[in-house]
Length: 420
Image 1 (cartoon, rainbow, N blue to C red):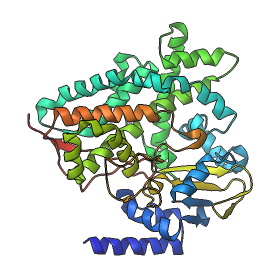
Image 2: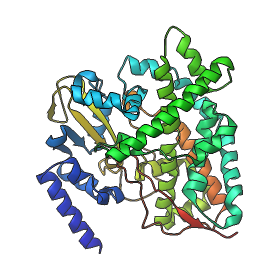
Image 3: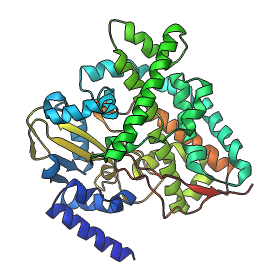
Image 4: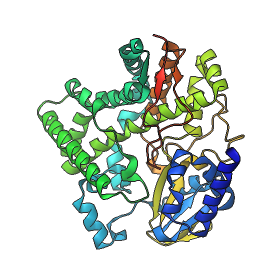
């Protein structure tokens, strides 16, 4: 069966190279397991042009690093879109609101927006949250331990980072259950392939609902300030015009989404990796002090963020290819994290691996603000789970129902059992 699968993937790669397109590359098979294709792209087409989509795809670690650190690569501005494209984005709340976030801004707007929240995620403040994160992990286990089985995504890996980011933002306790139970974030909004009308309608509805809630909460914080991030951002709105009201609401929405979804996937991917590699699971159980290095390896081995993109801000040449202004470049972070030129025996999970700079959090000026928070959440959550449920077993760590997105990678659910 493995030989047949490899032959099929080789045929897929030949099709991609012969007729490069988003449709030939981002298939359901690649969503389920992108790494064989990544390996062949690195070896055979490390700089892949997709003319139909006006973009280039990079898969080697060094090329990705070069691109992410380049100050001449950024995100599209209005001048790079047609009138029709601008009209579509302005008509759809999800696209319109996303474009107002620091995620898709270039300096000086990016610098201005990021500077308003960066202090909340500095190493000292995040480390001070470790005890609270640990307590949340144990509370969630307390809630489900007597059942003897659960979907770990809905019972554990999803609610933990949601509660943490709700606490940071200052979302009232009475509302947090609704956020925990609420609709999961869809990575389709930031996928390279177009959304269907149904997906876009759902994203618009969710985005508008979020904007309405955070607008009301910001109004409340203006009248009744609290010691939380939303209050700090509301104050920034009125200090020398640092933040418009629309920017305020959109960026709070971004902080909520980015503050939990990638960590949900990180923990789910980590559990799948461990239960597919029982020697590493046994090693970690026997040596809990290996957890910080293990989380770094989980980030490398199966990144929760697989893709990030940039656009050429000026005519230039990168990685031996000419990029006219406006040309988009996608970097396959998951491919870079398994580049054998950087990581020895890169396809193997090794929780004792010497730490290297993984690309899972992007790079350059857009390096993920919450990187250290995600690390601490994963460390404390996985440590609590292995300690409290030492006989936990995933029902099927091989045949996983993955979320159908390429940018964000993680399981939809993870059914597990343990002794009551």
